[in-house]
Length: 123
Figure 1 (tube, rainbow, N blue to C red):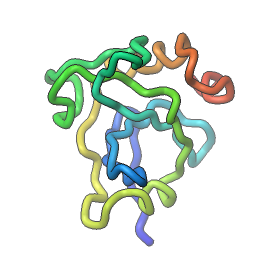
Figure 2 (figure 1 turned 90 degrees about the horizontal axis):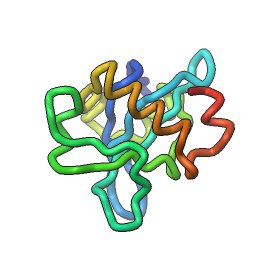
Figure 3 (figure 1 turned 120 degrees about the vertical axis):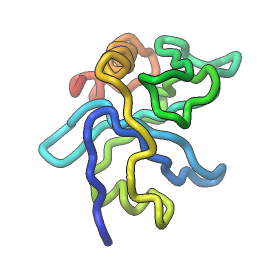
Figure 4 (figure 1 turned 90 degrees about the vertical axis):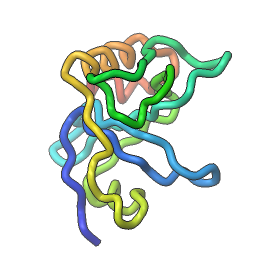
């Protein structure tokens, strides 16, 4: 199984059964080989809104309408784990966040009521 190259701010389309796929962004290193990923979702009435992203040059192209970072479904992965979750043939990042957007996402994680405390320590 091939691994994947990960940089902070990289976005990957990850299989998320049973509903298909979601875009996840690497926002912090949690160890020498593991990264914290958070998902991006379309904004809904009950969405946590500590970090809202709009389409633009600083965000991955996959973001085509107002979206939020869903800290509740954060996950910690290494490159090998990530490779298993990415659909075959799509092992490259699906975009990259600018440094400023990455910092906004990290700051949102610190104020989020839905991100687990152990992940806040990585931020």
